[in-house]
Amino acid sequence: MATVYLRYLLIGLFFILGAVLQFRLGISQAWYLYLGGVLLLLTQAFMGNVWTAHSLLKRGKAADAEKVLDQVWFPGLLLRRNRAYYYFSLGLIYLQRKDMAPASEMLTEAIELGLEHPNDSALACLNLAHIHYVQMRPEQARHWMKQARSFPSNDLLVKENLQKLEQALAARNN
Image (cartoon, rainbow, N blue to C red; front, top):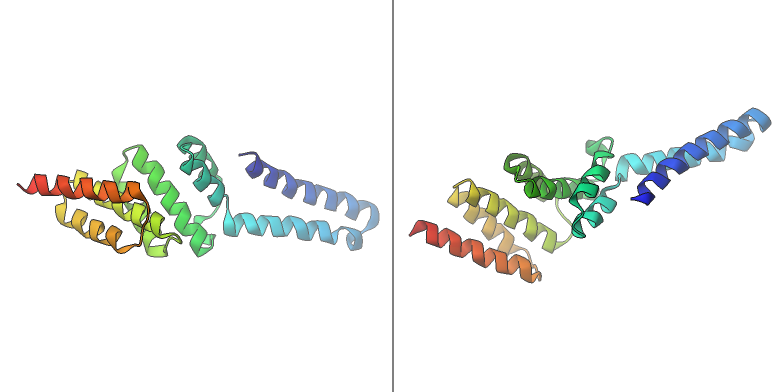
């Protein structure tokens, strides 16, 4: 979490030092500080703090991950991969809160954008299958289970939960 605030501190520091140097020595001595500040601003706009949030979420710190994701200024400007993981992480946070509608929307968006790791894609599909199972939509749940199985996931937890969900769907049909 400290690295998130360190970036903001550096952006501010570059612009303040640039202004001081420009005032004392002219723009010819300050332009590189402005350039550094602009580059950091651009990385914040196009990359955000998505990987920090995703890492916090993996460690079970959903509240901290949500705070970090709230600091993403314009999710639509994020690079495609970062935007996919932004929606994936946000979807998992909503799912933990049992807020199914936005969770489904975010996870679907993440899958459409394309998650980099097959385990993450399988997990997103599994969670969508679970959401549809809870909402009493067995056909959609089966569709997402089939999607989850299509990814070469080596995560035992995903495989185990797919089997449990399949058994639950079969029991519900009987």
